[in-house]
Image (cartoon, rainbow over all chains, first blue to last red):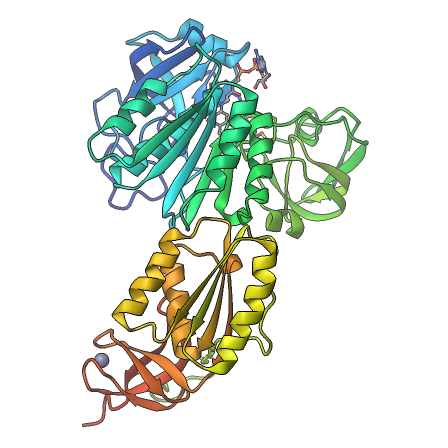
Length: 340
Length: 183
Ligand SMILES: Cc1cc2nc3c(=O)[nH]c(=O)nc-3n(C[C@H](O)[C@H](O)[C@H](O)COP(=O)(O)OP(=O)(O)OC[C@H]3O[C@@H](n4cnc5c(N)ncnc54)[C@H](O)[C@@H]3O)c2cc1C
Ligand code: FES
Ligand SMILES: [Zn+2]
């Protein structure tokens, strides 16, 4: 599977197993209609998508994301802002940067179409959650809003910390609306600078009910502060969840050799080049999406390796330990034999 | 493949007992906690002395609450226990000491309130009494019995065979009708 958008129109992939799902249930690549566009701030565009024939869409876990075409040969991940329960539309909010996000801002129009894939769940709520502490920084508010909405639907409680720059607070009104509903058990705390955010993080992590799970999404600095504060507050790692939209900067690394087990083909990967780029240049097909080690698309099975340097944020500690897989876009190693 | 001769014999899958593995010494206090809840269940002197030594270490490190209960099934004691859990904050470590019945039931209550294994430490001072879960009427009986033995269900009166399987979420040993099939 390759992430490069083909020139032919995408067709609905046959779903392997749909069980008792409704006829509109689909997760494969398909085109949805753009039914709503709303500018939330000068840089954030809210996009609402619906099935072209008006059928309901596949339900999703809160915190899921949609993979969206974002210009020629480019696909980006965007968190769904709804609660995921029986959705008639999918909604995402896109912060305008330079590449695919700017393309979406420029190109999308109501009545037009957009190719999507998913939803995919990488940031779900824990099943034993007694209360949720939701931490959002900037555009990281999107999956947090999804979790807050799901909590409200389930009658559960949540505390939201939203850190934003004044004038750039997408969805703040939605959070206040959730908190203001009669009987709502959602509370919103706001922070508008780094110091306030740290103080609030420390205060909130020290005073959450027993059995709370915490979820955070935002810029790297916020996520580091969050993980640090959670550890200091005595939270076991099993309660501390986060999602990264962008990966930390990585050094170019040392050159190494990878071998494709089925063909015996040897691929030399120089410093500054990723295993993914090396394989693609050698004509070995590998699927990819983010090229930053955050989406999980480029996971490759490993038969043997002299060393593996996992630099992604997808694999769990146990998966890293086992050495059975490697994320080709960021991770490196020595003499890696790929089970391809 | 084995040759097939006559009617196939009943295949009994191998049985894997899952019995609680209690530590032989009281576990230490987890110093990564930012508060501690020490629960002494049952009146025995062993339980009290373990609770006291935990308390001394825990309180020197972080705010610590002590709960002393006679019987987890007593409604007042149970309300006290739930109150302590409601007031506890994430970051707490819970230390439970007492007889096997009370410790298993208290741990199950804590797990139902969302406790993770890394937040719980327990020490059993006395294994005489087992919590026995009846698969028929779903009640839990406090019984003086060994796994593999028999006990009377306090819910439905059946004679139960106590299986060598302790279910953590139930805080009890699974049991079923010892006379089933006999007419
Ligand atoms: C699971 C997941 C969920 C996501 N959900 C969302 C979401 O809900 N909303 C959303 O907007 N994005 C979300 N993202 C990020 C999104 O997928 C894209 O990475 C983002 O839109 C940037 O795409 P681009 O093509 O415009 O970036 P490019 O222009 O190609 O830039 C690439 C990278 O350069 C950096 N960069 C470029 N310009 C800037 C700038 N001005 N300021 C800071 N950094 C910059 C960023 O790190 C960026 O990702 C999500 C990502 C993941 C993995
Ligand atoms: S392409 Fe996203 S993890 Fe490698
Ligand atoms: Zn019974």
